[in-house]
Length: 246
Image (cartoon, rainbow, N blue to C red):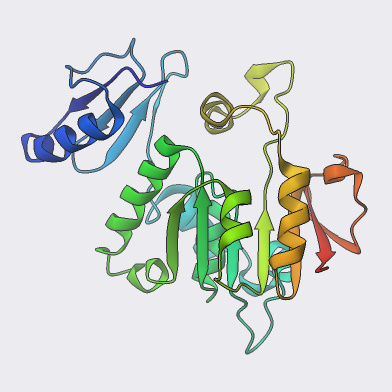
């Protein structure tokens, strides 16, 4: 998937060399025609054809907007997780992706463990988390977030970590008109590929969660593994399916 690493700041050269060894890819000059990790003040990813570079910054953009204007504990995600006055469930986000929902939940007081199997997404998340831990405005939120680069099914089967809620946001198939799909979702599809294990993940999650499993789906989408939930909470474009533990 990745062709190379580019260094945007000489101070990042040592880290670039470490990643070059870890990922077994060379260090090259910046080239927009290459799938390339870029290191400077932050870690970013260039994918040819998508017309932008990607990075995760918990302190700005959509993350900051949702933290400030997302509706707090009254928003559908918070209700689905079970956030109530005096109750902040411990959550495992088993499909972390860009970490957006994990960050929202941490900003509302939850301890969140993010699981991300893809090594490139995991690197972007780790870099974002490191920078957040050095940002005064959100350091308290970042301290409630932990990242594991792992296969979620294997992790849940083997872990002794307890979580009140396990949260799943499985990859949804790309629409035929790819121009309608947001570029960050196009990136996830390229990196992660098609969803092949959401039914298995739901099954093990229901065995491991202490209180419930929450599955995020596009409104109108079918149930994961054709398993009907006990209840659902809907927003304009999204549905949160709630499953009891087994």
